[in-house]
Image 1 (cartoon, helix red, strand yellow):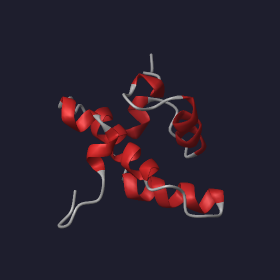
Image 2 (tube, rainbow, N blue to C red; image 1 turned 30 degrees about the horizontal axis):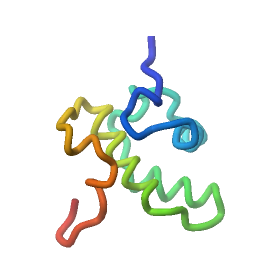
Image 3 (cartoon, one colour; image 1 turned 90 degrees about the vertical axis):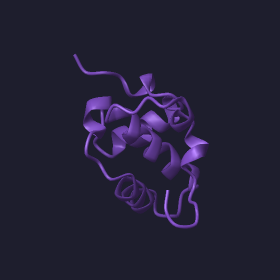
Image 4 (cartoon, one colour; image 1 turned 45 degrees about the horizontal axis):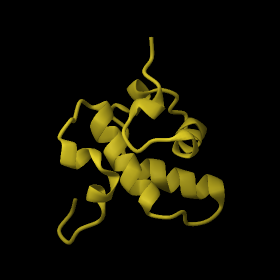
Length: 86
């Protein structure tokens, strides 16, 4: 059985719709995905630049899907861009 996207902390119905539009229908579908590519594709599908907070959620969601469970890293706002990388 596949794990629902909404089981990821910070992923509600709206983010779930975005991820499903990108072809990710379960937590397992996010394993190995590049969050920056997901965000770029989402912006392309939307036809405009989306709020970068969406990118931060994608980073956190992929981290979670790949087994990450550090409580601080399960807060999407801790995935903001920082000088010198993530």
